[in-house]
Each structure stands twice: as C-alpha cells, then as structure tokens.
Length: 247
Ligand code: NAP
Image (cartoon, rainbow, N blue to C red; front, side, top):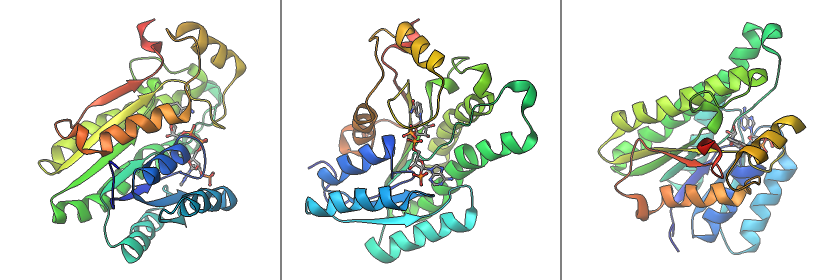
C-alpha cells in the first residue's frame, strides 16, 4: 500500500476524477476526506464504498469558493484524522458561454472556484504541512490551460487553468523544501463535466490515442504524485492527455 495511514483531502470527490482518486487513495491505505458542494448522496456513496472495503473516510460539504467553508473543511479534517498529508485540489467548474456574452460575474465565478479555491485550500493545507515538515499538494489543471488548447466558448475556464499551472510553480517555490506541489493537466476525461459534442469529436480526432480518458487514468497520476515514488518532483506539470498536445 503506497499511502498507508496518510490523510488525504480531495476537493470535489463526489463525482468524476475526484471520486476515482478518492477510491484509489483509499485502496492504497489513505484516510480520505470526500469534499463536495451539492451532491451529498454521491459523496455519501463514495464514503460508503470506502468503508465497505474496510477503509476510513468522511464526507464534508464545503464550497471551495467560500474561504470560511475552506477553513471548516480543514478543521473537520483535523478534528477527525488529526493531520493532512495530501491535498488534491480537484474541484472545478467549466460553464460554457460565448465570449461576447461573458460578464464579470461569469469570469469571477469560475476564478473563485478554479483559482482562488485552489490557492486558499493550498494555504490551509500548507499551515499543517509546514509545521510537520512534510506534505503533498496536487492541483488538477487542464490541457485547456496549456498554450491555447482551450476553446473560445470556455475562455474563463482556460484562463483559470493556466493560472493553476502558474500557481503550482509559485506554491512549489513557496512551500519547499518539505512540501511538494505538482499539477496534472488532463485531456478530455469521461465525466459529467459539461461539454459540447463538437468538442468531444475534436478531442478524439486530434489525440494520438483516439479516445477519451477514464477518470482512473488521472487518479493514477495523482497516486504517483502523492506517493514516495515522486519524492524528487516539485513544480511539475504532468500531461495526461491521450497525446492531444502532439497535434
Ligand atoms: P465533475 O464530474 O463535474 O465533478 C466536479 C466535482 O467538483 C464534483 O464533486 C462537484 O461537487 C465538485 N465541485 C464543483 N464545484 C465545487 C465547489 N465550489 N466546491 C466544492 N466542490 C465543488 O468534474 P470532473 O470532470 O471530474 O473534473 C474534476 C477536475 O478535473 C476539475 O478541476 C476539472 O476542471 C478538471 N478537468 C476535467 C477534465 C474533463 O474532461 N472532465 C479535463 C481537464 C481537467 P458536487 O457533486 O457536489 O457538485
């Protein structure tokens, strides 16, 4: 077991990539905090699966765009498991809208979850990790945040994910030498995140592997970055994109 007794907070783990990561981490021995915003039933289901397999998990409703909720998420984690070894900043939103219709509120809504939420969760985790001189933070960006791979109808999302890539390097510098911060930039993953059929078609056609990714394929990269196998890596971006950027 590669994460035996480690405590992992995984934001947005009621569904999709976060869910797959929570289940994989628990299988590797981690105690898991399943965070969600709305979907209590799905979060409870993830916790039930982990407990049913003999693992330890709790679910915590917390909106990562709300600084008070973030503090509460880490307080509950400390009260339950006593520490935080791993943070996966996975929660993210991607509401599509044509550029000419975008409002300041639309842009702020995306940035408050995808960027501010990531940095403030990292800050709360870092307070615990720095004092213990150990910790791993993994940010989930997107291939949309790399060069100009995003789509015009999702501009705030692409901009926010570019910011996550940059924040990863800044956090890695700020939190060394004991806390390692890395980032995964997934290509198109088969989850409930909204997207257009044209985009799916384009991604499949343009990727070397000619298919969507499975959430577990992102979870495996998270596991690598959370485990001792990646002890020499910080400030890095791993592209798990089915070869999309080779195009
Ligand atoms: P998803 O299926 O839409 O699930 C999103 C998760 O985030 C849910 O658990 C949701 O909770 C939670 N969430 C959303 N807003 C939140 C908030 N304000 N506070 C707390 N939790 C919140 O998404 P996904 O496809 O698994 O994506 C996960 C991450 O990977 C995101 O950062 C996304 O940008 C990134 N990514 C996805 C793809 C892709 O193709 N799917 C590609 C590249 C990157 P509720 O269930 O309660 O709503």
